[in-house]
Length: 424
Image (cartoon, rainbow, N blue to C red; front, side):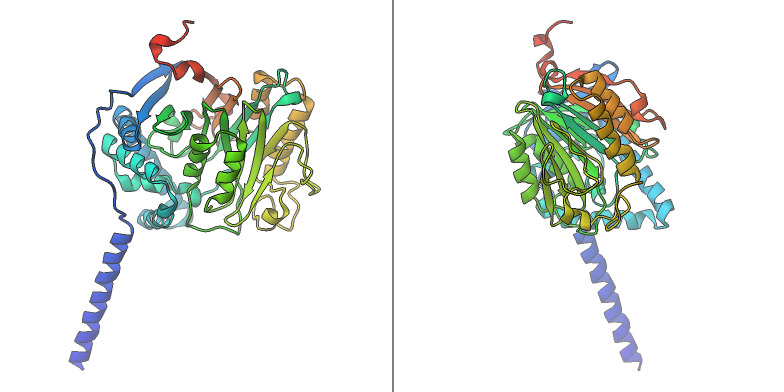
């Protein structure tokens, strides 16, 4: 009997040790080599109306190292904000922080095969340049696969605007308790072999939340909770970045999103300021609806069609995508009465119709502010995509971004070396 018991204990211990070893291996994916980088050789930081603008240029690891080294304090603060977010989540759902970290490590591992290598190397560069944990950065970049956002986006152009130019507005409505808004940054990227672009976000992020490329592509997304999701695929932040780097028009964006191995439910508005057109993409893991302005396929009774305007909140117009949605009262219910439909989607439609043909930057800003959710409006961005201009506001403490001053960025000037810029 003692022999049997000893064998049982020995086997149990072996199984536990093997399980722990496998768990450690699974949650610690390998990484590339360290490289020597002089962060100040091609990169620099400047201040625009009191805000931080970071310029990075070169290969993926090089840009990441520049980012981490030049904004070291801010990246460390951002990592702390992320830890605060996890602590808040731990209290809210009653799960220890280490368990949340383990879940995020597993999600990253499942997503890793779908993340372009250049983004992995850039994250490694940020971690090395700032001296922060690479695992923390990896977890941060898959948060969008396990959390919800209540955002809004619109693009207006052609006959809807005073001059035919394309204006693209985007509200990021998300958690403000973690403190990400305390260290905002605009990063101007000049990546080797890809389109230059501007990203509005926070130090430590390699993926994109809001932004516009110098090829005239502007992006935005809206959380749209679905039952058709999975934990493996390309994370949202990297899909948005691919739109900016790889697209030369909305046809490219359509190809990227339809061919992507997607994770959870999101709607997207992507616009092209040169061709002056925009598309909405409504996605789940296995389905993608593509819509243009005033699209005749928007046949659901709650759809509001407007010429030369594309706008979205959570509500899907594609009937297959809608069938899986748990947001906006959930299918088979109509979205009427939900904040997504009544405040954001219908609110944008009402404002666009009321100002149709008279929309300029000032009017577009009003539409954007009206659509923002209260007490969760982390940042708010308006782009004149045709002229490569941005107006950006970030929340201040617990006060919404839409209540803050919008800072103007002329990207055509900012992408030039300071000595070559037009004098005010």
